[in-house]
Amino acid sequence: MAWRMRTAAAILRNAQFNTLHTRSPPQEVVKRILPPKYGLTWGRLLTGVLLGFGIGGGAYVSTMDEATFSGWLFEATKFVNPLFSLLDPEDAHRFAIWAAAHGLVPREKRPDPSILEVEVWGRKFSNPIGLAAGFDKNAEAVEGLLGLGFGFVEVGSVTPVPQEGNPKPRVFRLPEQGAVINRYGFNSEGIVTVAKRLGAQHAKRKLAETSSTTLPTETEQHKSGGKAGPGILGVNIGKNKTSEDAAADYVQGVHTLSQYADYMVINVSSPNTPGLRKLQGRKQLQDLVKKVLVARDEMQWGEEGPPPLLVKIAPDLSKQDLADIAAVALALRLDGLIISNTTVSRPDSVIGLAHADEFGGLSGKPLFMLSTDILREMYQLTRGRITLIGCGGISSGEDAYKKIRAGATLVQLYTGFSYEGPALIPLLKAELAACLERDGFKSVYEAVGADYR
Image (cartoon, rainbow, N blue to C red; front, top):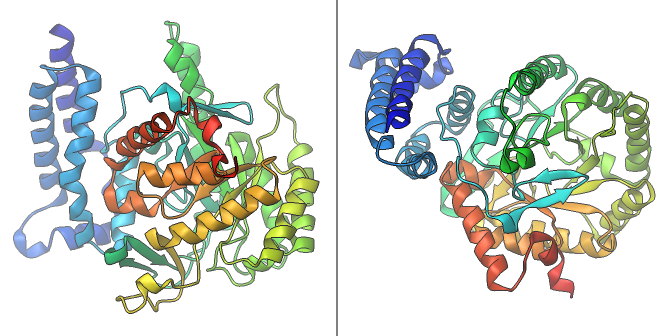
């Protein structure tokens, strides 16, 4: 009982500390949530919410163990997440990042089902469900996002030089289909800022490891393989809009950021940067990947070796394009492919909906079939010899399972998470584990590419 009361007191102290010392959220978000005429301030509202949460949560945690309380917190987000739909989509995105960066999201304390454990590239993933690039573009909230229970988080895309991206508005919801259209255009704070953030986090983790006086448990040892702490960190790099030498941009990204990454991704498939998708052509991609591999391999690496290199491709590719990419991937021994980015096509299910005609990449449920078909095709073209990450339209454990059966070893989501919030993550993991057990698989590995056996 004593430790429970100490936990309750700690929650209350954290609430008070966060209220006094955290940075304010984006000002435009504050204005939308708290119109001046109501005489409220963000500090007062946050104080009330956090104190109420601390007192109520403290009383509640005194009656249960840590894992049960963690589950309660995830369930509680179901009541908060709908409020984000009242905000402008980009404001909601920025606010979510701010909340995760300041510890205002639940932290998963329950172990993942053992059936979900995966080892890829010599790195251990406690589960195969990751957060795709584009959510935390500038590595502001890595610790908070990994703490939600993702098996891995991918930050970026990061460009060498800071750039604003495309003019606003540039994000549009299609809630009837659980979809989003965005034309952000690689808005990025640049590799120097991101490197500082990742470097600080890396140093913090190393300090915690060296100062620890207790031996890690078996579970903690399993999760400690990533450079960002629990979970695996991927870094996605892009080119600047005005750059005339794309390869130089990607090489600069590798030289600056790869030391902090468990894997690196070359993004050549965003539809919102002019000319970027041309880099998916056979010769262009081959030349680019060769230069990036040389840049990575010329750096000094320890026993773990360099981070794996992946390429993220578009879903809007012809069969010949896919064959060319597969040939390059096999010839240069790429470590993996991410399939896929957003689509510039508009499936019948979104035709006629508000904002469906906006220019940009479509993500969410309408992308699921298209991206899964491309995944299936690429698995066959590469003969299962290259690790594939399935991305596009995942909103349930069954969706993740279908991607795995189609050839993915790992999966990623973004839009489904933006609609459903943190409560979706433990649900996905439970549903995926149930799917594997239902069909007699003892591990994720056994199910990879099962549609072809």
